[in-house]
Image (cartoon, rainbow, N blue to C red; front, side, top):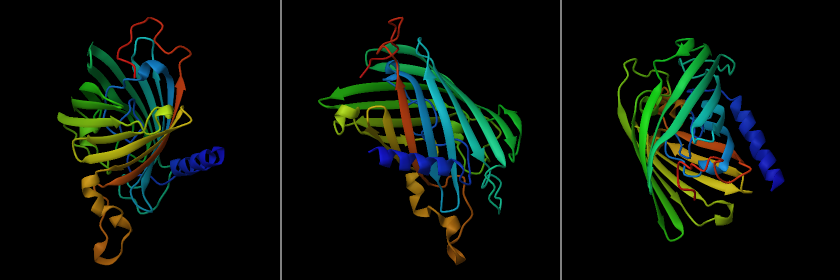
Length: 288
């Protein structure tokens, strides 16, 4: 098992230096979903979450991120993400993974909790950009303000969570080409988590389905050794027939599109709290 884990880590670190296309990567934001926010019903057990994430757009293009998320004693979630790349953002013809760097800050807080229903609000994608972007420095045009309503139900050995929300910015205007509309618009998103009894001793295998405002994303969270999760997914599954068309030749080749599908791969490491509950005994959610 340790050899498999080491190989997986090496692959992910290699991909973080891979040529890149866009900066909001699946499994790199606070929460348990892929690209959209949702209520995390297990945050009272987490002190720190480390994510290594990569999305493959083709044999030559992809995007990667390293992120850290932590939860305060009051239940507020804070996240920081680091993106390094540049290829694909401006339709470059040469790959240079050191042309652009983006640092992102993210915040999320529970504001209502009654039984199985919870409401969170937050701000994602407060970013500082350097290098080959259309803009440099502090970027406030693509900030994502959001609110999300969630419901969780237990059915025998299964746990089903649904999330519905509204947002501005990158959450609902995500683009692989950094061509988000400069005018802030509000869009809706929704998602489902289906936790199964498979690998129950390791916290259960979870099936993910979500709509991010532009397409359908599907994924899996596969736990192992209790503290680790392997994350697998396909973004914009509805367009998956067009995967990797930039690598084709002749009449089949097409330029990268803003809603291009990708194959997502990631590793999550959950560092638990010493105590299983918040020290002030004010748990924002029911713990499963």
